[in-house]
Length: 185
Ligand SMILES: Cc1cc2nc3c(=O)[nH]c(=O)nc-3n(C[C@H](O)[C@H](O)[C@H](O)COP(=O)(O)O)c2cc1C
Image (cartoon, rainbow, N blue to C red; front, side):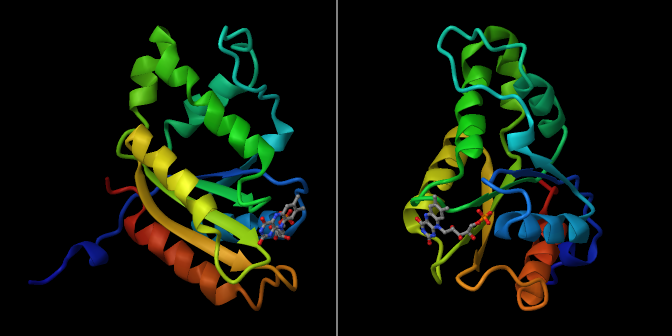
């Protein structure tokens, strides 16, 4: 059977959510390379005021809901973070925790349902050959819980740092994959 979909230009409207303890480090450079290839925006979560999850929701006036309004208009969503102790960078964890607001608060429930069926990718760097399965698994389980479609991981081994030329082929493959399958639901 002929597969036509690879020939069809698929509209993609990606957003890259980025967290790291340094904007100009390995993950930042990788996120920028992907952003260039996809013509997507990199949102630096550290640059926003997003406070940790509050059971009493006393933080509704911070930058989280305006950011989510933008994220909910995008597909796919690309989560870019270094691996820090088998987990993501803290601002990414705070972002993920705050998605709980969209499951808790009656006035946000409908908006939160818009996450369903959105494609989610993970972009990460570490100093190992492979991304830790615990790190990947936490994202995978979170996306599954939210009804999102876990669509792929790009991991770059930055034992010797991030080198745009050396890592170009890997990055380009990822960009092509996202562009091919990114937003066709
Ligand atoms: C606090 C901290 C924890 C780290 N934990 C891990 C780890 O668990 N596994 C790993 O392979 N690399 C680990 N690393 C190395 C980073 O993942 C790696 O250097 C990464 O490319 C850094 O990206 P950045 O420049 O965006 O911070 C850690 C680095 C730091 C600073």
